[in-house]
Amino acid sequence: LLLLCYTEEAAVIVSGLKNTDVFVGESATFTCELSYPGVKNVQWWLDGSPLHNNFVTEISEQDGMIHTLTLNDVACHDSGTVTFRAGSLISSAKLLVKGIPLLER
Image 1: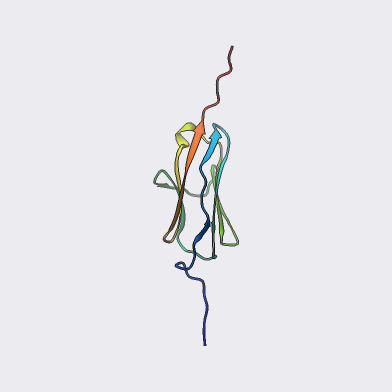
Image 2: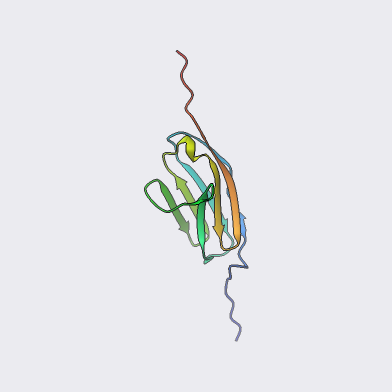
């Protein structure tokens, strides 16, 4: 009897995070796609601090392979490095939150 199963070690990152620039008050979305579903210990981080699902931070997954983080109503202090970790897999990208330019008078 031969059993085939997907393991965390078999999974790879198909599409990693991309650097994102947004203006203050906008939303920033990061997506990471894995080759297989079911990878354990999925976690999102911003500058080394773990992120959790709430009204400002939306964390979702589709089919166990497409993992998405949306940061809503961002501020300048949200600029930094966003990191996705799934088991031993890691992808990172920069978030740059730009201030709204002042209108010339």
